[in-house]
Image (cartoon, rainbow, N blue to C red; front, side):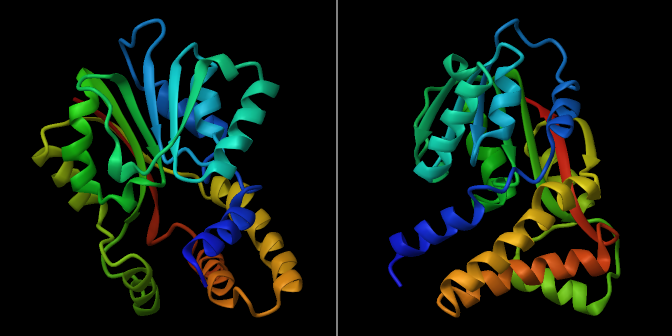
Amino acid sequence: MSQEYESDFLAELYKDIPKLGKAETTKKALSMLKGLPPEPTILDVGCGTGMSSIELAKMSAKVVALDINQTFLDILRNNAAAQGVADNIQTINKSMFSMDFEENSFDVIWSENSIFIVGFEKALKEWRFFLKKGGFLVVSIIAKLKDNPPVDAKKYWEKVYPSIKSHNEILKIIEKQGYKLISSFTLPESDWWDNCCSPLEKKILTLREKYGNKFKRELDMNQNEIDYFRKYGFKYYGIVFYIMQN
């Protein structure tokens, strides 16, 4: 299977699935950013279909929404126009590995559930170049919440995400990289189920009927994650927001 063909399938799988969080969760994190200018410049890295970008634009922010998938960016543009904030959002089709913005370009860098692609510590180190002094870095990432999780849970996450870290390990990385931690909070389980697991599980069934076994590996991988959270919820592992200041 060509990489382009697989990418088209993944776009079909995820294009109708909102970001894992809800608008209320984005607003909660945003409310913790004190002292922003009246019209802050915000970079949304790995923006997907743009739920967060649109919420950020509603606060009169100038948002640069970056993603490598043009289908997602087209959906973002349509949704932003429907909600009256298209003029506040610039979409850029670019890999987060090749960002070339000028130094001190942004008041805020935002990244929900995508920083793991670069690597948490690597991103904190490299993205600082684009962030103004006193600016904010807001990210969410899956983390181990408790020591000694069940063996099958530990095996699952170490297989699908070998570099997964505990909440305390992440806090140490934030300190090591010289950021000030403003706050952190775990994503509510309802966000995961309402915005991701429930609609994604329905989409998986639809695509199994459409494609048969053609994309069995990709569909099984997503179903396994849903099954994991159905069994354990966020008791041992969960998505955590980290709000930091440069």
